[in-house]
Image (tube, rainbow, N blue to C red; front, side, top):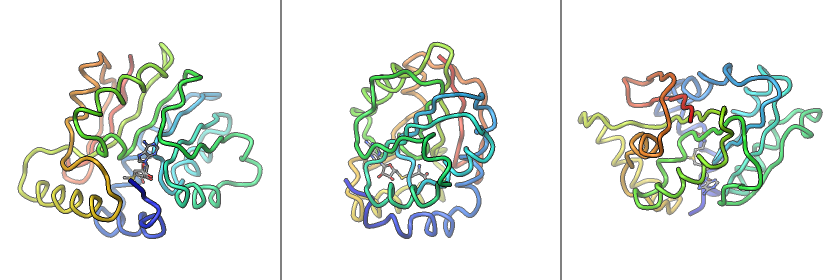
Length: 202
Ligand SMILES: C[S@@+](CC[C@H](N)C(=O)[O-])C[C@H]1O[C@@H](n2cnc3c(N)ncnc32)[C@H](O)[C@@H]1O
């Protein structure tokens, strides 16, 4: 699996297909992140989300885990020189388990895993959340409408060919979080209910 090839055009392509919904859905709950929070972002992509987060929250700090070197390079270019002390970039696929976080963010990340792998990923992420922490998960939801099924099928074929992702269809990510006992505190839908951002607590 590698998003290196797609990294230079990833944001452009997602904007062409989803317009502002990709950005709107991912920034929706950022304002809820308390001052001084330690934030874990898994699979953050090109890094625009950190720029947004740092602009609205002057005291949080981020551990940014990204598998793709090209995505990390792009992300670093978006950080203000004075903000580098607030962010640690980790180029890896493992969830950093040496610390517990106030906030975990997974945006269009859980959809990369087949059902059987997602169980362990969700468990591990829950384990790195503080007891009073929360988890912002933004991703596609399949209401089985024809246009949604078409977009999902096209995306999974595309990312399977270009990025060699493991999943071949959208996993039931909300069910996995529910099974781990996570509670939906608030949720917001975008793009004709095809994209959902959910704020979870333990
Ligand atoms: C579909 S993209 C979403 C990027 C970003 N969250 C966004 O919505 O714009 C998924 C990202 O997760 C990264 N990724 C995939 N598996 C990963 C893993 N196990 N750990 C960290 N990053 C991973 C990929 O390199 C890619 O940048």
